[in-house]
Image 1: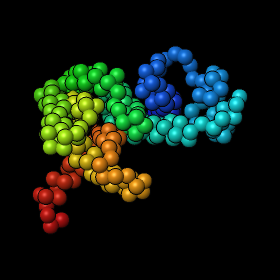
Image 2: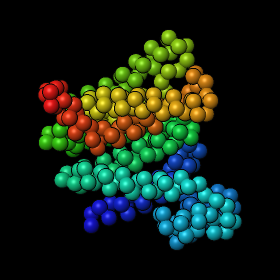
Image 3: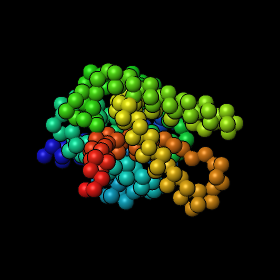
Length: 267
């Protein structure tokens, strides 16, 4: 029953995240006015704003002007529902407060992922308040995602904040000196400072590794498919968001598997 509730909650939050993804880069309020058709401007009725269901019943179109909505609205709602269920499944034995913090973190990652794809920015409205909240939560509330039997501790949380922000800041400075152009955006630096505060220094290393691996694979693929030049800027935030999510959900298990592999090379 709790997984059904988690999925439904994720669908509802996903509908709100769609609003955030559209409005935050435009500098618009995410609260008022309510949802409305971007073409005809008619407010969306509550019965036409039911996650997944309304999109299917209306065939992805506005009831008034029949303008088609992007299928991404549907996909983000579904994605949020699935990720909420995964988080609850992974951390079901943790306290409700821990679950809440991780669900908020996942929501922030989803918003960062799509905004950075669309606009190549990671909003300060997410990362700047997220950094102190991550450090507080990591210092006093959260378990160590790489060892759930232990608390993260303030040393690990602050160390993760310094490691995440410091490493990416160094990459930005050195990259600027060598390449004579921005090698790392300020949004990536602040994002990884937030991630470090929440996941600790191990989370920073793991997220950076996974994000770089995914960025290399998909980035090269995008360049080949779309015919972009090698000097074209590809947003790194989406890959860091995926790396952060993998670190949160499975980083500890992958780390244990990795250690076991090296401890018993003949196994």
